[in-house]
Length: 234
Image 1 (cartoon, rainbow, N blue to C red):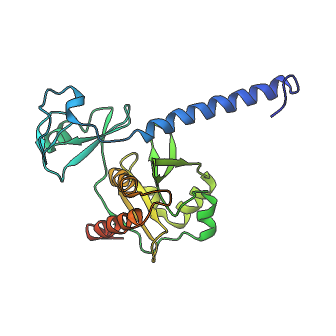
Image 2 (image 1 turned 90 degrees about the vertical axis):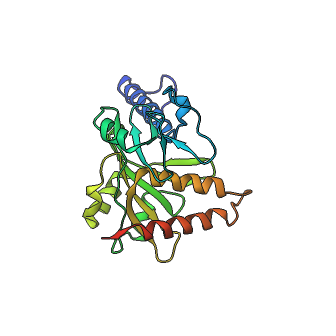
């Protein structure tokens, strides 16, 4: 970057454009990081607070089972717990979208160490989703502080899609490509995006001290074992 008065007006305009773009991206990412489950009583639906062991629909306040569906609120960047009636009635709302339902492990996935390194993700666990709000692919990985965004090399993503065309079938906003290179063998799967944020929560809760301890590793292993049991193999 040139010093004060040292660049042309064209260069200054380019620099300003880059700063505006960077700020817009930062605002977008901070919004995506706020994806979380919201308690029903905070949503103004008039439902009574859930009792011990109870969960409530974030839209109507009715009690729902532990194994329930979710809707994404695209504007507020929220994942909402939903009863089946609200999923059926509200999925067509402009700001709401159901999370994906398929869990498909991709056992013949092609992803070399060199291609993975080009994504510049600092750990071997991440998920990629096609965001309509971002207008493209975004990548996140779990950390003690929650989900963290990683700069995505679009050329590398294009190469990944070329090698694995199934990735191009991701349902926008609702599904993600989840990559686990911490396990042996490595695992890749197309999963509902709310499952990815559940994994982020498990890692955060299981983290102990500076190094993390064995909690995150145990949580990741248990999560993928459960996921595999529910999956269909592509």
